[in-house]
Amino acid sequence: MDTGKTVNQSDFDLLLDWLDKDPKSAAEKYESIRLRLTKIFYARGCHLADELTDETIERVTKKIPNIVDTYEGDPAIYFFAVGKNVFREWTRKPREEELPDKTIIKESNNKKEAELRDRCLTKCMDTISDKQSEFILEYYERDKEQKIKLRKKMADDLNITLEALRVRAFRIRKNLQKCVLGCVANQNE
Amino acid sequence: MSIKETEKSNIKEYLLGNTEFINDEFEGKLMTDNNFFQEFQIQEEELIQDYADDNLSETEKKQFETHFLLSIERQEKVTFAQSLRRTVDQQAIKIEQKAKSQTSEKQKPGKFLSRLFLSPIPVAACLLVIAGVSTSIIWNNFLAPSENEIALASLNKAFDECPIGSRISSIKCTPKRKTRGDDNSKIDKLAFENAELKILSNVDKNPDAENLHALGRVFLAKKEFDRAIEELEKAEKLDANNAQIQNDLGVAYLEKSKEVSEENEDDRLRNAETAIKKFKEALALDPKFIEAQFNKSINLEVLKSPEEAKKEWKHYLELDSDSEWAIEANKRLKELN
Image (cartoon, rainbow over all chains, first blue to last red; front, side):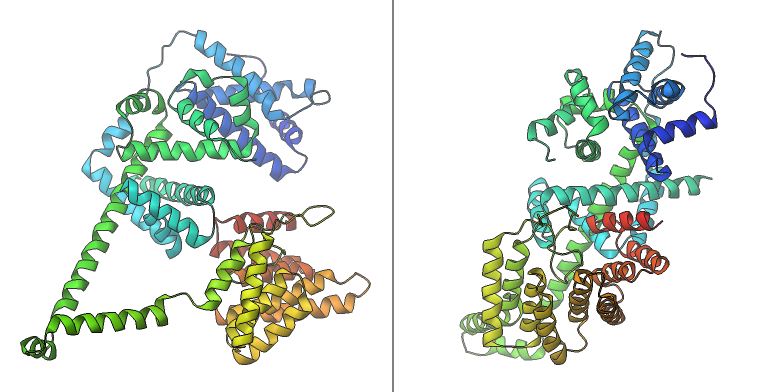
């Protein structure tokens, strides 16, 4: 990997400024690009996606002074182009690293761990509104046929499309996941 | 931009490791198209839940285990999905058991019923008659939608995007987008006209608070705010402690204040101040009335009280953190900051 000069705060500030003049929007765009790159690397079969993303961002940051005045178009595409090169180099390296061994999945079969997660989920369900927790319990109905009918009914009752229903479920689920992760980490400390 | 069905199925293939989709077009879209990326994230979660629920085919399961579970984060998501499945299933069992125990309680006959079963009168015939009459009474009085509810459902069908920036009670629509030039909000004109006719006919037959309120909503949607105020004030006289009527009156005054030109600052302020009184009244009657909370926050912006507006937007987000209205609230809060 590149062993040139390291990125400092002013380089990083320049990067953010390139993404957007407004600091808050710039930070959001940065996080969004970071997330998307990581997901693409994972989807391409790379288990070191976070490292590759860091490398990509570092390379782009170093290039900013050279491109800031001339580059036209969505910066995300530039990140993607650099990311492809980083990925190509990674595929050519000998694979010394071991793949993660699905340890967490094995542990999930452990009764104690499962009970802890369930307790945390129950706790987290109490932190969201009654409407949201009812929504989640209905949305994730097990029976396939029932599920389809129920979701259609839920969408009709809320007067939204099935698509909007999916998005709503996704958002509540994301919040619950974050909460459960935090709860499990606290319990394990 | 809506996503085609083929694109949606391609996302699943990509997640399971099909290299056909490792190309600039597909992945470039992931980088730049927010809707597409959101769909990707949703499908990721759905795939994880399907795996946890054992709803994947054998091939998909293998692909999932060899290709998808590369990161600790994804593995943790699987454990979350497993936990969610257990929790949902347990709740379903509890609800079923509760329903069964309630039914068996109801089946225990009292002394009177026991004597009835001993009488020579054909019990079955008696019960049939009672059942028929009861069902009719229950249906007509409690379960059948009222004329007003039918009309309101019709009114809701007319809108995808809201016709005005403030939130009218019981009208489910998405936040109005700011556009330059002509108003582009899409209205199903036929559905709206049907709703209007129904509501006018209901008011004719019975000018009670509910029907007058419905008419007020129609005028709000038509942006005829003076007429809306007229009908809503009539409704208010008949039902003073109705939070929704208060909210909708507030909406009428608030929208009126926005229409007033900047030269008539006094008029603008007067309408905005009347509006906020109404929203406060609505919230006093129902503190979790999210539409009124949303409207109150906008109202404070109109009254040029940014600090108070920020406070109220934050309060709104405590009540509603995940709807499209919450996104709108977040946007407004950011703009104020």
